[in-house]
Image (tube, rainbow, N blue to C red; front, side, top):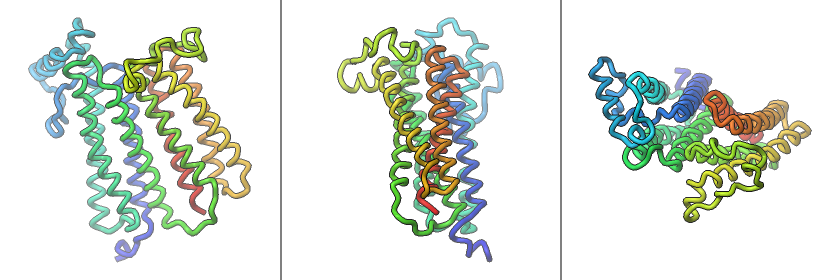
Length: 343
């Protein structure tokens, strides 16, 4: 009977949402590895159910390889790839898709269980509905992204990759916020404070920077202009302009790298100002101060990783670390924004 009365908070729901968030984090890392290893187009069909099984016989492997051999990436970039080499990239993409399927199960089954038992706080149903829609949208956009590289391109479209990562990061942030809400219960009334707006602004800036990073990744712009702080010895990239505004913003290697660097400088300045201000604030409780400082430290670490990744011409290890740190930074920034709005 107590489960029907426990409507304001639920530790079990909070732990479940944090588990789903951890799985999203894992998917982001594996997705980054899939991109860095050039594995994203190795599976050329979308089979939501039967695709969970990998090739189990030589004939199955031959059919998968034949599908890959039919797309431009194989013909133009990898015409000498062997079956064993194909298996390496196949397993990265298959693992990414398997994680997506597991995440769906880990989200939907407990969701149904908690809903039937009325464990989910009633005030969180709007947030849970939004999370469900985002979860449903992500695989659809993922396949739309993959499809862009199967006919007329050797890689997926950068803007579709950006949207795919952007949805994943939005899902991660929503899960962290809702998990904190589920554990803490309703917020008590607080006096107006400028910290709420500052913290939300930091989240927005982190999110924009992640999207700009996705454009860098989608255009393989981390493999050009590999000096810092200049661009091949120049103050600005020499090939900034594309063929029109959209081509410049979304497809110019020089432009997307410049935008990513400029916003990184802005983000570092804002995060450091917020971190120092939070530490010195008389208004904020210790938990908020720690989260504010933590976000500032992660921004500095992320900036250093970004420079190292660029100058090393995007090796897989540094590239994955850079993407993981970005996701962790978003989580901490979201937690900080959630915390400063409560007592």
